[in-house]
Amino acid sequence: MKISVERETLLRPLQLVGGVVERRQTMAILGHVLLVAEDGRLTATATDLEVEISAEAELPVQEPGRTTVPARKLLDICRALPEGSEVTLAAEGERVTVRSGRSRFVLAALSPDTFPTMERLEAAQTLEVPQALLRELIERTHFSMAHQDVRYYLNGLLLEVSEGRIAAVATDGHRLACCERAVDVSSPGTQQVIVPRKAVSELLRILGDGEEPATLELGINHLRVLVPGVRFTAKLIDGRYPDYRSVIPAGGERHLTADREALREALGRASILSNEKYRGVLLQMEDGILRIQAHNPEQEEAEEELEVRYQGGPLTIGFNVGYLLDVLSALPGESVEASFTDANSSCLITAPGAEGCRYVVMPMRL
Image 1 (cartoon, helix red, strand yellow):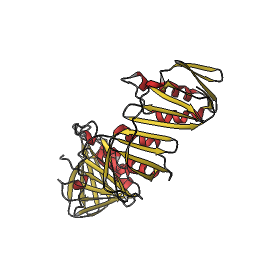
Image 2: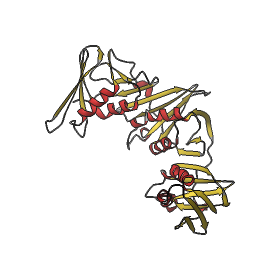
Image 3: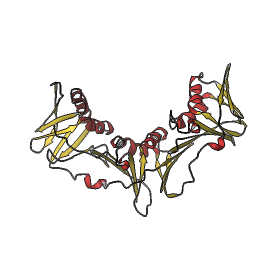
Image 4: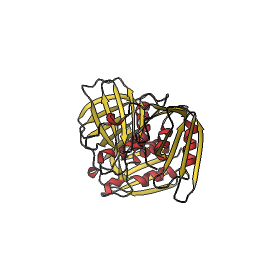
């Protein structure tokens, strides 16, 4: 195999697939990227056996062929080369030579025949959605996924497809984020897939912000996402996701409307003196006023006061401030709305600029 290409053309596919490669592998081949040069294009593929990403670049192929190269070393070499420089890759046996100007690097290769690839995916359902829409669904929910929970199905993001609708849901048992959008899709029923945390992170890296379509192929054990020049495949978490609709409150009799950015900044300041372990803050609401209080074991205290619109009787309720900040950072627009029932019930957070997005946060005792 031999190719000559501008540095930037080679760098893009390597960056797209490089995030999959773990620094410590159980198999040496998993630290390599598979390069296939044929028909006027180079295809780079990386995998950790759970997630696989292939990225293509159009370029002149001098000698077609395939090889594997240490992924991080090749990526670091390309990053370190000057912008606009010409790079030549030549594979011979167990060595790959990289040349650029007066620089020469010889890397150890492994047999491309030993590179593991995902089995053929039998899609139960295929749909197309704009990349920006799928990215938005993930960005507005993924932060609520659990971290290494024994309930393994919570350590991922639920994608749910039904007639004319797609939804993303994440929960760790203490909070829940749900965002849904109308899409042009015909579905005989409701199909759910649970996408693992690492796959969600990689999806955010490859999805663009435009209206170009992303093709989703939903299988029983796999999810495949196709965007121009990139093929993403991930194994799904096997499990039954809890009925998230049953925990979304219809809305309480107490309603608060506040400036989103002012509330986010006030909570951020108060959180500085909150308990580092539990991160609790106390919200005191009455007509037109919201007070935010925090304290810690060192007897330090913080208090913030905001003018808000509030309907309902006086209420004092505690929350993990990190959960509230995550929601406020994910929501767009200038204002945010929250409804409460009492100090022992979950609150529902929405925003006028994010129709279809709902956030549930459980209270905590302080």
